[in-house]
Image 1 (spheres, rainbow, N blue to C red):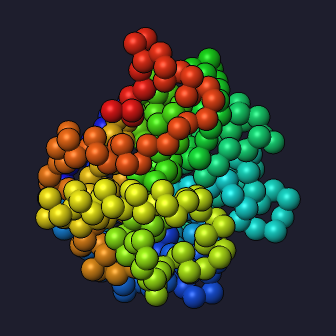
Image 2 (image 1 turned 30 degrees about the vertical axis):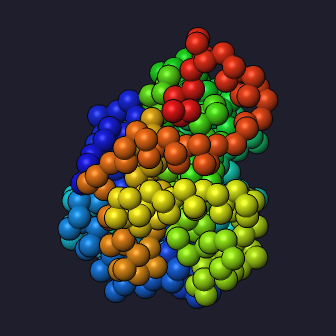
Length: 345
């Protein structure tokens, strides 16, 4: 497994990490992602560690906390061998303070995650989303306290816009508070918005991308093709899951899959492996989170490492997935001589 620096920090993380969104049960609103119980989850963690994947990503809302409890069970007795990443901000209860990034909610959330995970520290704690109702100074001071107390080692954010992230970094710099070193983002061959502003920002400010849903919300599995029926098992078979994810036009998806198919045949790899490898060659990407319902899916994802697409193959995939960005990015791209976009090539 290849290891990379997490942004501008000294922490080394695997190029692939494992997401625990599939850990839970049938009663959870996350059941579309998977329902792995303790025994199945432990087996998946075993395979990951054998392959060198030592970072596991979770969140307090995944299966209403069950994902963290199951992960805690799976790593029991080998805590020092793993890196734990988890998140909070989204609503985790019915009370008026059971949501957001206030000192009250974040403190309770982190304490709850520590209990469920069965650990006394979190390696990477990330805000799950931006909370415009809480002063950024309050949020960052709370996270800084958690780092100084030893309960959290590194901090990051997720799903921030460019100004959310830059303002947060500026506040940290102004007051000498712990800085975000990671941004957990959606990025895929059918979702390249990250490149327009967040990637240049990340490169400039030393923030590593931890990529979620790298297969385009289940669209780049190789099972969805022009003229073919939908696979029987897919999150895209549930309207609630579709609504929660990124929109992708069918014809655009088919064009990208056709290009992936061509490269897959040349390399002897699968479509998901090619899609993951493309991401791992992109600037600012520190780790790509993969999930798996079962051992077979996990082992297929592991085949994305240990090799590289050629520049020509990268170019073909870039061209097939290219979309005209919104303003002001389409205008800025006309001035590449002095305003280069790191993800354009």
